[in-house]
Image 1 (cartoon, rainbow, N blue to C red):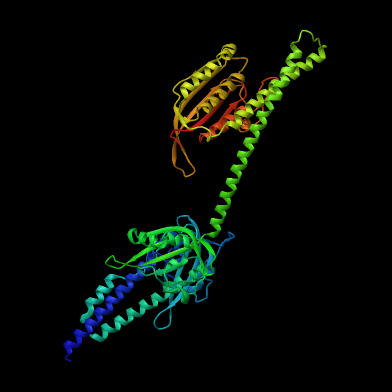
Image 2: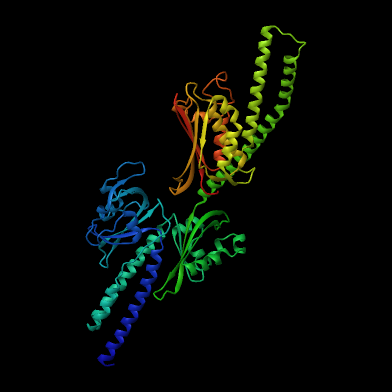
Length: 557
């Protein structure tokens, strides 16, 4: 064969090797991008020479490649007990010194923007073709909020193009260069394979495009119970329970990942020994350079402890709800049954007191009057208890309620008392809300009644009811519209230290002789507001009046 033919044959061989390298590189790039871990590489001096996007999430910034020392990407290190970890004792520093570092060490890191994260570190020393220590590859698992994983192999397309452009050199030089690249790629693949294998908190699987298992890490063996020899080659449906197989859950998940790129699912999964665990699964499609699906990554996490705790909490909530319902029914029945004997007591006492044939000594007449008064208070207490037990958001259907009309009814009911004490009651612009009509009427009736009852003897009573719409943040810091309804008066007021106490059942700030009542009215108000998904507040000052503020949702629940 002449020399040009030999050159042509060698160039064809080189092109084939380059194409294979590109295909392998694309495949591992896709695989590593899906892993929920951060990866970065240091040279022998501790300078960062490579990192993936997940690492920048943990660091809070993107360091300069080839210029940034590894320590400069952090602010501080801490052990789990809160004590400071010195740089020399950090697993990364130990690995750079050739000391065998502890794999999976739990640390708390503080990055340069002040964020603290709890992580596990897996440093691994790698060697060059001459057997010399080339640097350290570090894997970080972030336990403060891992939702997806990304790892990347940094191989420049420009380098491959440059390699192809340099094919004008001798066949021997080009072949040696390709062999060197191939060796570097193999070493890189081995490093990443070892890191994936050592992750024990996640089961990381590589599936072919039909769902058959091609790769199995140590975490998968720990969680699912199969060895790599037992499971590779089997379909991933082997982990699903019969009822999920009947619903074709594995097929639906792989189809979803094929169409949308990712499928997320939680449910009970089966181990080799037949036991079950609650697994959180992320199934991600892998593509080649042409966008064709070449397989899937499947990352599973065992969340059995969390699921068990949630189930126990839900069971406790249902039991507590049932007990509260039974207690409410008992209280209602008891209060209802007390009405009849009390009615008889009042009848007999009134018969004695009003009988013209009965003449009692002054002392016995006083006792009889006290008994009549106590019976009246008991009747009021029973009526309030019945009202309290009837308050429930489930008993009546929510409907639009015009509070302006409700307030007109309330003022009409209190008209006699308003005239008696010379009070002024003003209201305007009250909104229409979704709620239970009779409960909202009782709410405003109690608040206005309190303002009239606790009026100041030295000034004409004045009650002002107003409304405005405000925005309040919920538990997720999202603003929600509420109606703020205020009932303010110039009465005797109260000490601000009692602003919570006054809503407690049977709590009274004044004696019965001075201000009659059962001590349940404001407790009823609080329960009504809670049934309408709102809340109530009270402010006051002795001798200067009180103000009750009700917040009700401005949109229907």
